[in-house]
Image 1: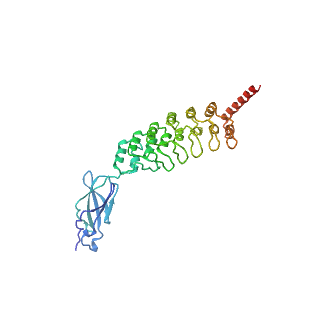
Image 2: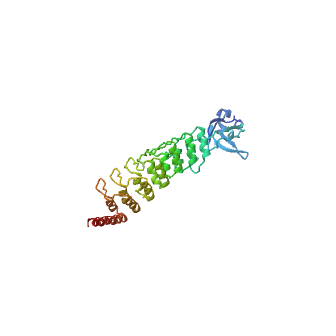
Image 3: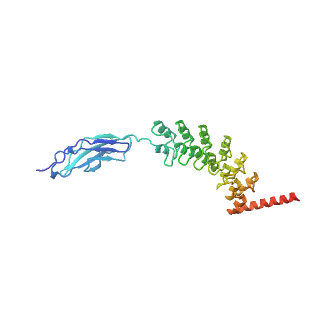
Length: 342
């Protein structure tokens, strides 16, 4: 007696549906009576193509399958048939399934202004209520911190309107004001200050926003910060450095130092180790900065807690140009003393 293909199955049953996956399953009972000579039943699922016609998207022996990589909020149509050793049966009726909308995430919020200032997208995501306004990215930066650093003032305004925390700090203690200062973003700094960001906060390295502003080299920003009331000699909490001391390190920005000094920075203040701005500038070899400090009253004879002067620092670190300047300066002092004594 010859066999027959399996009967026409019921349409696939829809299981879990997401924005990019659809699960379908089918019942083996729909195959009808089976005989040994019929062989194993194979299933084929087809999906209707956008251009017309149908294409195979699954062939196998399982009774379920998850179709992945689909587009969100899109309608898909599927049909099923079974086959055995005697060939395929008829196609089932068509089942229609629509994927859901992709849920909004913090990654999407950060991506909305990572490469361009997409204010509308940021507004749209925040108004959905699905994404917290302070959700950090993989580096621990809140959206406000990222926008502040990039100088995206419109994004900053939108985030603040949605109650972004202007004092949010990441694992290293950085906040939006520090990053805006480091990037020299004056308009953002003004906005953050108006919303309650403070000059006294420190990161885990002990630095304040003012110290990060020194690193930016933006003298216009520094003047505004001082006019806004930040103490010009505010100290970090680790080494006791003032902004002027920070300016005397690797950057050695003379114009930044000039602004700080003209605003009242103490040229002879000492850090926790007894070092002065002149000592720091000398050991880093910043001749023009050394000259400015001397001109503004820095004392070449001051010693740190180990009895070392700026002259000693210049010699120890082989800063020859600075050492030559100090030699000439001390020689002039000696000549002047001789003249006064005679």
